[in-house]
Image 1 (cartoon, one colour):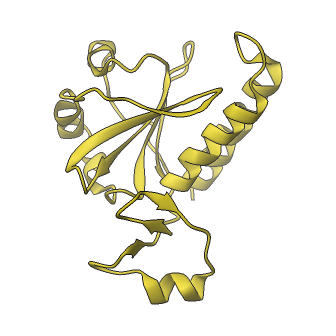
Image 2: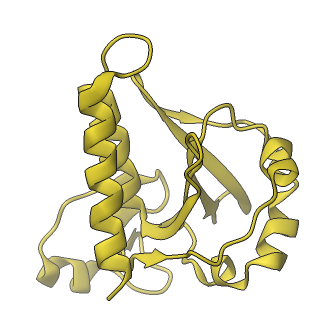
Length: 164
């Protein structure tokens, strides 16, 4: 569950999640939807215009601030982009599925590392799971082989869940 007012994730059982979530509630249930998006389109120019400094990012709509935000992983933990992300509206217009994401609890995972181009709608807790992998496994300047293997396994898991 997500405590909406402060953006804090909480671990709760399903029974409690049902009791304390819903419209206009303090807590929001994090959905389990994972959707691989092989047809997602974003040009290199659009990506560059977002000014996100690395090729892994999670974009979601923050309902409190009423704007799209970007978080990207680092060895020190999550980093929030303070940029305005004005190009997002254009990207969302071209990719209608991102407009179906639930504010605060779902977002778009962008993976543009090397020649890979992968995009997924995922729950926010999966975003933080990826950030945790990077934070725990990163070694040296480039991360090391272990972290990239873990990231590959994470993406493979998303592909399998997203294909269902």
